[in-house]
Image (cartoon, rainbow, N blue to C red; front, top):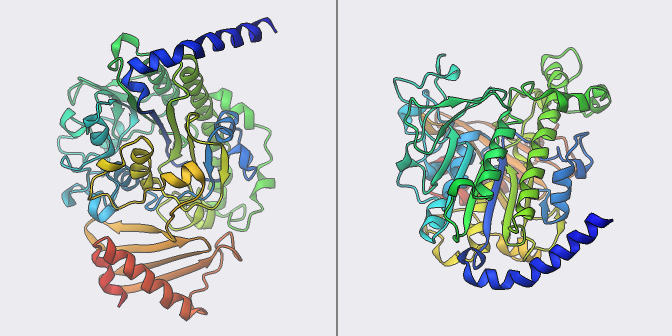
Length: 486
């Protein structure tokens, strides 16, 4: 009781002096931004949704303090393309990140262009201090490859990001892509390509330690008196599920997995994909609970430092994870388990808490949406293709698209692969190989929430309707895939 009493007295005193402080600081004229992005976090795997048996108390609290989107998607559910769309506000044909950044795709120019106008470039020009911590995965590896374990096989994955390719981020503790979560590696701000270091600490915990230092401005790691934007890009629950501290695994040791494997989209025991799910899901949840704890630490620091009220906090993921569901290990497909992502946006000064199951918002929409929320709508670059849904965040009303697109592209030939649309009820997608449509899928998620029955054959009128809508979308975004839909 005594500590509670002193807490309220302190809060009253702080609130009295706060207006005088804010007048003197530009950081209070526009909000700060803390953008937390996990990797491969399925959209239904949040405790407060009560869909999967995952423990996420800190995210549950965060959701109760902001807008919790329950229908958010990743339009290209693969790491680099999703990140490329987020950073540029452009769809993959325009962003140039048409596949994962690796040595196999490097000959086709698959990486974030140095000339791209990223949201971080915009904020840099507006006087923000910028920090990036964690996974980047937007640079193409080049020979001789950096000597990390994931560059020694047939395909090289990991690459250093030089300063001129960091798009305004001054504070930098990051890596390309690297999945040894219990012994991660990083390049710091001034490191050369060969000057990386390893850490004997679980990646999310180490990255959160650095994020807390940034928020507290330890050793002047950001410019005092300026607003800031910090990205904390956490790799788990990406594969390497088992590489998680034992204390989080222990929480799930008694979980009856078979009870949760009755969904019709999870293959039976004895099937290789079904067994993969059963063997992986406990560790997957353990990763999530561990990341959830780190998010709680970040939020608590914001509150302790007096930053909470005027900081936009975003939690999301680059994509989801099928993990054997539908017979698919991984992502890169139109199923809900891959496309649906968590998305929570808080800003105590302006956003009223609510759950939003209706808004059709995609990861890439956060570029114009956040800039608009932060007061920079007028300087959103003209080349941004994604949707500004800031009004829906503030009021729950306003514009939203009828559909969000779906992409899967072969970098060697960008008209090979998939294009599709995901609307309120239907998911529609078309595959083209060498100029010929080879597969079409149509799912009615209202009648078939697990997407088990492709109804395209018995619904030619719907197929024609969605082809026309998809053609219109592709024309709008200058995607030559459109030529195959006539």
